[in-house]
Image 1 (cartoon, rainbow, N blue to C red):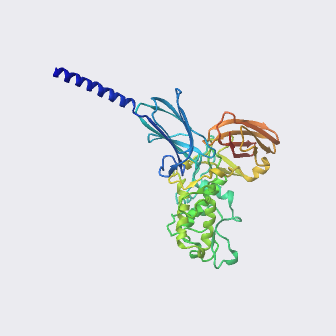
Image 2: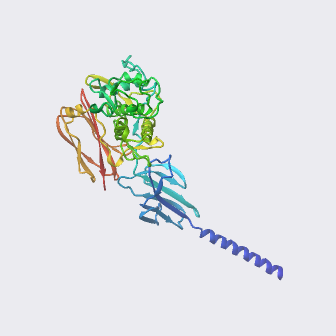
Image 3: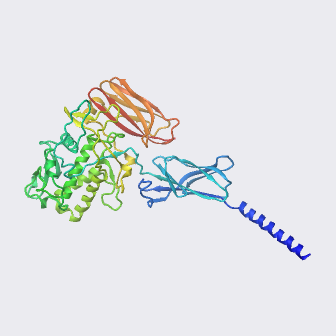
Length: 488
């Protein structure tokens, strides 16, 4: 009997253990954790240590039905004991915020979408992290800058831009320097570096650049002298069209370069193909530990002008700091590749004319969001108006600034513009990624007077949109872009 008893006992223990193991397996919890974080600098891949938890509205529901849960104003949603299957994870859209991407079980995927699907198996623990930011820059916003070196701004002769068999030669940087300088300055209105103080020339100094050819002499060799103010270098102000031998100063060199890069951007010579030249000078400086944080680049340049003339007001250490900022601005958007004419925009040629003179239009190549570290950024909450061809063209062709009402709107807004003289008009709407979402006018002939175009955003999600007006006739081109907010 004993062998039979022990055999039955062993069998009972085996089945009991198996049943207990199966019970444990059936009771294994499946967990899904969904989190929302804010990215401070708007860079998805380059920096990750600047992210903090952000309260958000999130939802998880089973694709097959039977399960649905929502949280609001929370940074974390934890769901346990889920059945195996496919689930949809969603986060709400929010005005002024942009979706950078998703971390799915620590695997990063750059994406602007607000929903994702995930498969849950029995016993799995999965995590999804939504990465959102207020500091978003579209992929299409680009710049290009040039350096105060012999091979760039020191290039002596511009290329002759005469077509051969209908094809224009490739311009060089001297073309940019000469055209930008000629559109802004001349002998009677020189490019000033520093502050003009005719009342106190014994105490204050400044520099005047009166011709574009002076850049070749100024940058015939790279500047190596320390960043210093003028009054320790110039004895008889003003110093006109100095050579590098007269003024070897790295701060001065980069200040001149930044000014010319801003002029080239403002005048449309170096233009962004999407925004038609978002102004380089309106970028905000964001370096967290700098006293210049929050200032636009053109304001920093203005401050540098004062520092060059008023030495006694600033410690010498301040000159090193502002030199590093200006140098960074020149190098951040620098591209050593050959120049390319900007011929990608319909209705906009590779050349423009101003006061009877032809000037080049050069493509920008360096994406703002690729700059690392990104100390300059667009002011997303207060975008300046994108530049038009020239103030003269604006007053003669477009008599008033375009407007739209209401703003914010839901779902219809009316865009109003006034033109003087007939021409071809295009009006298109884009989302923040630069994708075209609506065409209201497409090269339509319009007569002089006031015109209205209605935009119906029914079917589009809430968010920030831009409309771009392009008006052309035989002599002039006009481009303007404005921001509007759809709030449902």
